[in-house]
Length: 203
Length: 203
Image 1 (cartoon, each protein chain N blue to C red):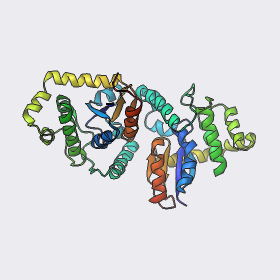
Image 2 (cartoon, rainbow over the protein chains, first blue to last red):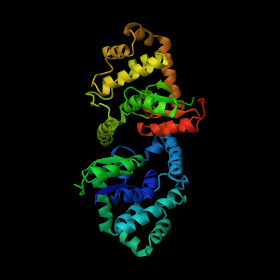
Image 3 (spheres, chains in turn cyan, orange):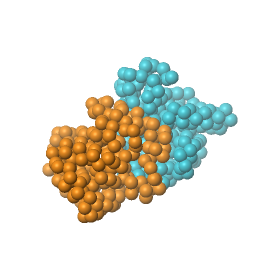
Image 4 (cartoon, rainbow over the protein chains, first blue to last red):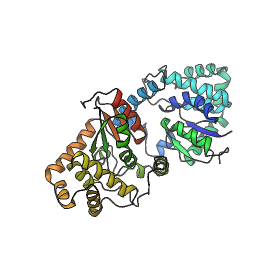
């Protein structure tokens, strides 16, 4: 079965519609999605950015918030602009990485919905705990596991891999042949590439 | 007839497929395109950039060049990466602004094709002159007119208007109701908005 790697960051606005839509679209194209949480912060820091480009460049930020309304409207997704942006998604990324594929997908969608539909702050541990529960798991052991040194190191390695694969923003999609697509509006194109041109194994 | 303002910069890579495709798509949607050349340089300078973001951020630049190949391939457009990037589009923008709508469209497409299909440098006056000739005009008087103080001032005003309308990149599309869309991959969406939701007059 063709595979598509879905690289996402919990603070990323456009990752939200991608996360909510990707499984249904992938099923249609018969593509398996591999959910790969990572952190944009270290990648942005390498570019000299200490904040989101949507804050650093206000015209771009104003456009993005309006565009998010349009995108979510077109996708029939609830959307509420969070009071704080960007939010700290470190704990969420650690939790996501520590879970098995199906739990990771369920947890990640729940955490995106909490932030971008529910207006909650994902830096708050109780919000992360609620998303763990929404994935059908007991929060405390999951949180403990997520904070273990081995899992923290795994997230650092995951972020290094993102950088090595040429990722500079989120969401990003990488096909089995290494082909990179950036942005929610390239999701369909990435799936078609994965299904028809890329082969089955990520190199 | 609904109208869509097409804001473009000659140095902008993604403006090339937009310029080559917009008229045929607009005809289908029964939308009139108003071609509006402007300069990104002053807008980027306001953001602290003294070069293209595709040069300042190498991972983004590498992605863009690969993506341009894919985009042009999908649109069946010739594409050759120019030796120099970005190129100085000042003279081209002055010429485009000085022409009437139909000549402007023909000249602009010819100049984009020279740069991104022909690999020529549009900072070279002879390349601009060839594009003027391709629009069916005699180059010398057009070039003289383009360099006149009133036309130079008009281009500065056009760029100020772009900034005031929230433009931060190219290509950008603005509907009669002020709705802004950024990027070649939003061209179809902008046309649908212009045709169905925006009314006839740019406010």
